[in-house]
Image (tube, rainbow, N blue to C red):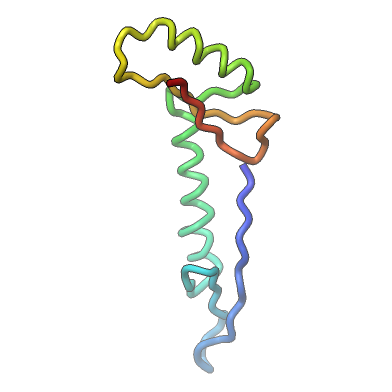
Length: 101
């Protein structure tokens, strides 16, 4: 997954400051390390969690759709919604939530 966001380098806040501040549209950061820890590492950890989830599948969207159809046939109760989260070459750079109702 690729994430792109704009980061601006702001002027140093004080004469004794060694590094400039950084900001994106929502937050300000005192250093590039803080920006990495609060955005990039957070995103990486979230992706790791998604990739380890039992409902995560990697494959073509057609393959996932076939699995959903089969799972829908096995569901007896109307309150259950079969779903998968996946990534695919057809939707690269994205996570896809697929469900069947």
